[in-house]
Image 1 (cartoon, rainbow, N blue to C red):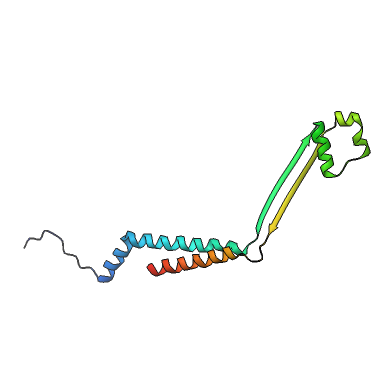
Image 2: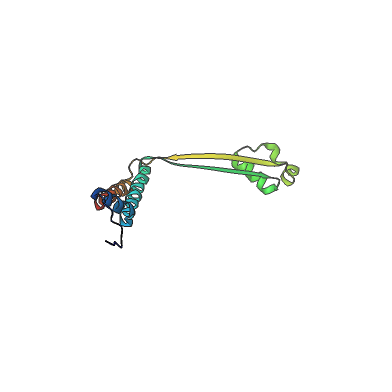
Length: 128
């Protein structure tokens, strides 16, 4: 007897495993779930404070800038009004670091976004 193909016995569980392994639709669905979960995890920021940091600095010998900087700092002395120092000041510098922490009491927009992200995650999970 001549056979054109080799006969192979395969179990149903092996077929199902191969189909799941090579099914691009299932792979895309799994990625959709991961994306929805990431969107939901990003909404954790609703409960975290907003922190910003800034740094400014100035070092100048420009007469106007030097006088203005001292005026803004509140460190003017009577000697600073000396015409020689006003016209040719030594280097004036001012450096400042600012850290700001803001925590909203109630962030309704964020809470609704979190609920929407949770609903999207649940819907995507049910589609899988």
